Image (cartoon, rainbow, N blue to C red; front, side, top):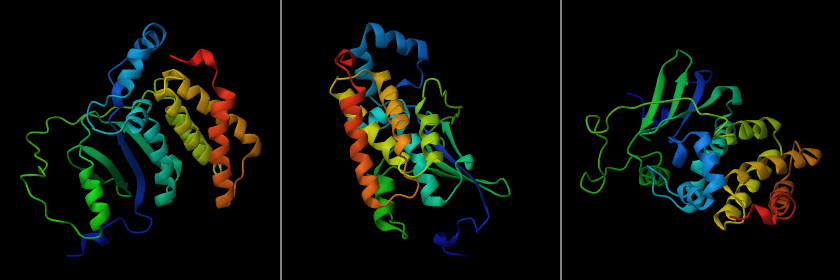
Length: 248
């Protein structure tokens, strides 16, 4: 039996990466309902965006999950980590958060990484790789297929989650575009959490910042270029994109 660490797909054996997203706070909301809240009760929308149905995380990443920006960034990460074309990286909504990612091989087999929605497991594996640590069932519940219930999947609504096409566009543009995309999101979310902008303004300021950057895009950036445009994006959001009437 080959060691587990050697059991990944051989060269040329990978067909597709499938990233799963819980759908965040608004997965069961219609876009029209969210737009109504943004107009009539923006503070309720703000509170909802920072409450996750499955995971217990900080405010920033919880908001990224609500906008699906976390998954847009993961698409870019997967491209660089695994050398996979953006055409071969898909995102699906999986409300139960049991399947965390999947790999489709050339022969159409699909390998899934599964577990309860608990960040301790990926943290443990990061620290123990390539080994696997035996855990206590008392403090670390094992996945029970009879208790976890049905697993469902659906296509993301890109009108409700425009972050996905924006992330793919930044990734395909390459170079410093991805750094600007990430930094603009961080600045926009920080201002949203401070109630300086509304929920849907997050998408708008990121889109405006990425569009402005295309005039100065560096396709083969140095580390200095990346650091420079990271700061440029944060400044652009704060100084050029945000106006007083956006506050909630």
